Length: 117
Length: 110
Image 1: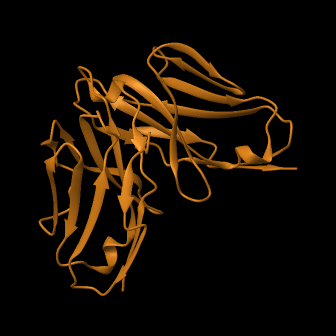
Image 2 (image 1 turned 120 degrees about the vertical axis):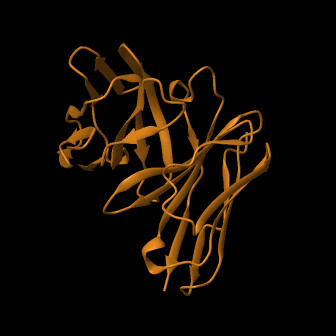
């Protein structure tokens, strides 16, 4: 089992640039989560998909952030335009959901460390 | 007030010591998760529980639903246990949102 795969591992870019983070969930998992981790706020849920459909995007900070899941094996998180305050580690996680995904263990990718200069 | 509170924030122990990390929460939950974040940044799910106790190797997790409290215990601690331990709860009725504690940074000295 390859686990959750995220790319890139590190991204450094200038403010105003578009940033795209990618995630491949574990095969067979039908729930996918994007999280952001900062020193100040810890881990926060940004958006969650179930069967490729966005279920809860209330954690997405603002319109500059968007996420898509075109199929069961791929998701992207896009920031456009990026700002220095977006600097953080972004994690993707997947799980095999039952009736409530919070009852299923989540498997995390290694994260993307994003620095916006 | 944070919905998930962990204590202590930082913990230093000598190898071999018994360690306890606490988590209190203020919402109704469907499940509580303990996660381990390694110094390199990766996150691993250790336990998911909604009642009672679970054990895996030297790790034990307990939960008291009435008191809204969970503990993570490490027996015979080892330097490789050094990590950040994060408590997260799945709120009852939610469809996946986990609420995270700020984490407990554990350092085990040889």
